[in-house]
Amino acid sequence: MNRIFLALLINLFSSSIIKAQTHYYRLAKKVVNGTTSKSVSGGQFITFMADICFESDKNGIGVGHGTLQRNNNFSNSQFKVYMGKSYWDDESTFKFTSDLATLNVVTESGDIYLYKQTTAPANATTCSLIRKSSSTGGGGGGVYPVQPNYPGGGGGYNPGGGSYNGGYGAGGSSSSNSSSSSSSSRRQHDLCNGTGKCKTCNGTGSMWKGYGQSGKTRCPNCNGTGRCSGCNGTGRR
Image (cartoon, rainbow, N blue to C red):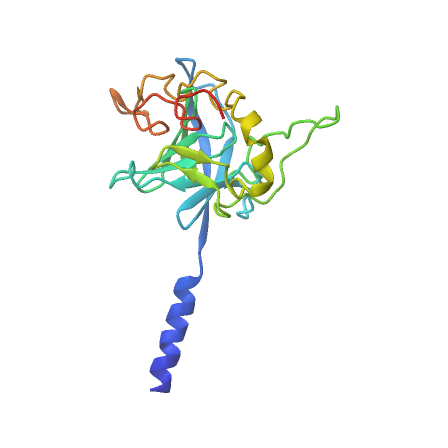
């Protein structure tokens, strides 16, 4: 009986540990402003942990771009789709093949970057693309904090519901912000610059599919509505 109880405890403890996997993806092709180019170089380390992924160094430590949450509404037996913050913007879509061998990065503006999973070069220790922080005092900025911001704390990106509630780890709104809520509601929303249109599809509600696929598909960031997911089409926050 004691052995059975001990085995159950070990099994429970083991299943509670989140195992992370880190892969290196080499940039193979890009489509920017409708122009395709194979004159590309560099690559990104991507770490997977439970239902999130993020850009990291070779040891799985995030480079500070944020995290992307798996969206089961757009994932299927062929593709695994993650949405959230990345080097490119705050509403990126990472579309992996089911075996994680190929990655299509789709930005808010509709640009596409095709990555292939491969063995990392010997001298590669972190991502080729690391976003610089904005300067607060006229300095040169610098890289973002190393550790990624994990979802939680009351805020977070909700890809299924088409809303953006304060960002990963932001904790959402609090009572301390209530006094400024009236003035904030009159400011244009940062995600759409006050247009009320979804930046990913430019308000059309659809976008081109990734490499190797023809036709268009429903925009994952506005769920086909064409409205900005941050302000629900009002252009205000």
